[in-house]
Amino acid sequence: MTTALITGANRGLGLEISRQLGKRGYDVVLGCRDAGKGAQAQAQLAAEGINADVLVIDVGDPVSIAAACETFSAAHDHLDVLVNNAGVLNDYGELASELATARLRASFETNFFGAFETTQRFLPLLRKSTAGRIVNMSSDLGSLHAMSDPAGAQYDVDAPGYRASKCALNVLTLLFAKELAGTGIKVNSASPGVSRTDMGGADAPLSVEQGAATAVWLATLDDDGPSGEFFSATLDGQRHPW
Image (tube, rainbow, N blue to C red):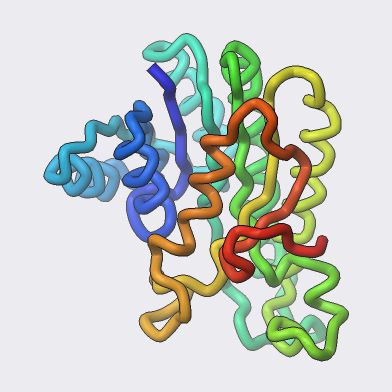
């Protein structure tokens, strides 16, 4: 059985990625901070004919990550897909000069350190897969190109902690892809664009299905697929400049 763990999976993009992978026959594990909300998501997928397990994991808490990995390892001898989807946006509209350091740290704790520590903990299990895939859910806003292009749609967006943490997450993608080259494990960043989730809002240009599609593609890459790249739903799944 091909097993996929998706963090932040009880709603939005995480739930939709889980749904799409489940429909492809993957053994889906919903990584959720709240067991009750995880159970609700599990029931929703079950009603659609998709079997999924719930794994309690708070990526902002190293103790929780370690405990989740131990729990997962007791039930699974390997992991094929890790989607680091859990994330926060807590500083939209703020200027860097006015951002409280505590909120900046909170952005990095989940968006960067959470993905980093989760990847580290689960990497031994991914190494046991015949075709491991790591997908880091980044953002167009994490692109240095987007930050520096006055003609771009993302240029004037103020969300300094979120943008910096997603940019740093892209660095992790490159570093892990370089380290794991030749192992069969592929590591890529995916941007869902602005999708109709709680974060993106009801008027966002992309549906949640469209936003999840790029991550699902990267999670199911063939052996000749890319690694160490950044792709965006905004660009119809094409490469996004770093």
